[in-house]
Amino acid sequence: MKASAGGYARAQDVRHALDLLAQSDGQGRILAGGQSLVAAMNMRLSTGDMLVDISRIAELSGITVAGDRLRIGALTRHVEVGGDPLVAEHAPLLTQAVQFIAHAAIRNRGTIGGALAHADPAAEFPACALALGATIHVQGPDGSRDIAVEDFFEDVFTTAIEDGEILTALSVPLAEPTEAQVLEEVARRSGDYALAGVCLVRRASGHRLSLFSVGSVPVLATATMAALDAGDLDGAVAALATEIDPPSDTQASAAYRRHLASVLLRRAVARIGDQRT
Ligand SMILES: Cc1cc2nc3c(=O)[nH]c(=O)nc-3n(C[C@H](O)[C@H](O)[C@H](O)COP(=O)(O)OP(=O)(O)OC[C@H]3O[C@@H](n4cnc5c(N)ncnc54)[C@H](O)[C@@H]3O)c2cc1C
Image (cartoon, rainbow, N blue to C red; front, side, top):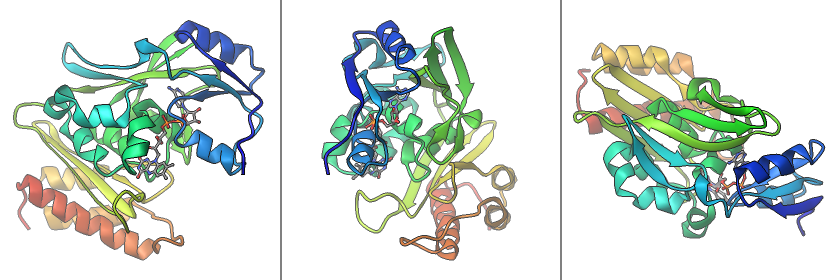
């Protein structure tokens, strides 16, 4: 089936994109890498949108260190995140994530901003952002604002980005010298969306654990984190069972996802190697 769009305009810069969104009577839809949006349009899950193509806005791409944070522009493609030395040094969780995202054609076009804005609960980057304690930077007609990642994901495919706003970047704290970051997931085939996945970060201040594909949004498992901080892995696994409410679908039952989550937590902890059982 062919995609259905209400119109198309290519934005020259962020100001132009914001103007195009403002002029679109609520029908404006940002087109970044198109890897999720065009698929939805082809299936007529998204119709009548006025597409505002931001894909050529150079100021939205790139990876920099600014002070004590790593900043990644929204239009930075998955393949660029995966191969970037600054990301590998300062946020290796994102480097690990890229190898699990879809296949090469999608990684060559898909953008990290698109993945965050799309807010698929089975996607890797949203859960990574949550585990890393990212800040999401957006710009709208009235200026810029920063959103703590804990407030960003509201429901399936729903975020705190408001109509007329553009996600411009995310930033994460630079990894400490002794920090550990690991991602573990299980998918039916290489490149498929995960049946369940975990992102574990250990900092001097404590652990951060997020899970994906176990609910309507990525989950920050705070009770599990507290048990990990206490060095109690069995307690952490028990806590995790109370913190997730996974769905059953054609891919896996809720019980199987719950089982996978506990196995993946143990695997992630084994890779970090600091817990007693
Ligand atoms: C077959 C297939 C398999 C896939 N497998 C995986 C996978 O295993 N793991 C995974 O994480 N992802 C997977 N994806 C999704 C892929 O990572 C997408 O690239 C990503 O989710 C969306 O990025 P995009 O740049 O293509 O966004 P687009 O498709 O262009 O946009 C997606 C949504 O985000 C909005 N948007 C995009 N950019 C912005 C912005 N800067 N500001 C505000 N709103 C914005 C759009 O309006 C749209 O609603 C898969 C996709 C396909 C087609």
